[in-house]
Image (tube, rainbow, N blue to C red; front, top):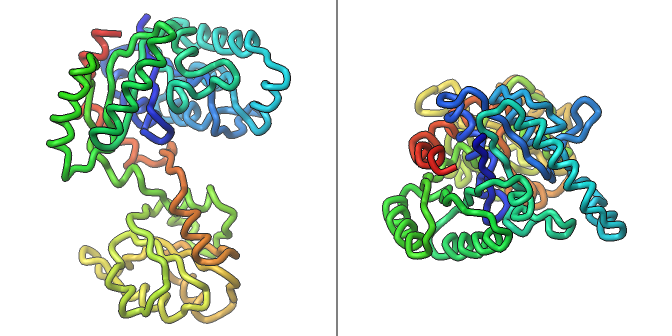
Length: 362
């Protein structure tokens, strides 16, 4: 049975996006593909059990039925690390992972194993990514992102940690490369890593769609209240605009799918934003959503006017700067209903990753 461990040089390099793309593409070539994320840090409650978000996504999107609990055997919840340091129990975690993997891999032709963070993550409870890859006897693909120097340095460092555990690195995928620099980086990163004896399996251009949240994701990740526009929570956000200028200046920066964050009292700015319409649809506002900060008078005329639009409005009691900072720092994850993002992930892996090489070398 074939297996491969998907690691990264750091968090948010795109492991899950690449894993999803690999699985969907491999499903056209291989009859039975399984998935497991042995250790998960972001989890949700499903059927009374803590399940890693990425395992749930893969099950829903790829139709993999390996049992959610087995696809996500260890959830690192709040206090997990402190309890482990006080009372270490390496054997129990190892047993959980191995038993879950054995059940997931049963009758499969290929299993994608997704790690969490860089090669050393998990060392604090004796189960680093490098150790887990060794435990499951899997070769590794390392995902990195960005430019030339830093990714190469990080890849070489992570490769050393895996090799210390006796784990073979199959190759690397460099993700999120700016299109304007793609040709240059694609050429140089391959040359640089070839000198280190590392195969480049793919170089993937940055896709702003995958990095952009929807209004619904902002609502899910915050404690803001939904005032109106429930039907339009899947609106994507391409630009975030903070309402701290005069309306005539602000409208210069409003593009299609802009999110406006502004104090609730800035009625002049809100009205100006609502008058900015798309070139392709003169009846549709460029604004995809509004977050009103501070105290809101939900009975005011402007609020009632907003109810008549197709624009979702969120209410946040915090100040404008705090709200803007929180939204900017959100970790954007693909969700099962994000059809356009899923299609983009599958396509970018198909077009930019050497799938034949990966299958041959596993």
